[in-house]
Image: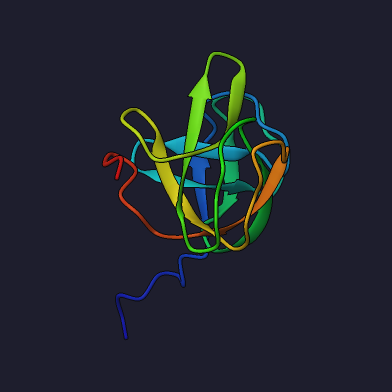
Length: 116
């Protein structure tokens, strides 16, 4: 196929801020987990598929299969329940209790403009 460019599991975007390897990065309607560190405005490669252990908001409770959104408020960033102004990033792979600090998330290609 002449017009095939990539599988899409790794994309390169312009870092919206300084990021470290393993950070969740949301750029417009695209999101993923940074493969390497990058300074603001530098190119950064993101994994858009796979299962990752990500920081979870204290108090949020998930069961396997629940939708997971990314919340970025000031300097605080974490997985949270879906709501307005949060970016959908995937699905919980296992249960995560209220006091858990991390959770397993399967990234899913979702339009990050729609909080569902």
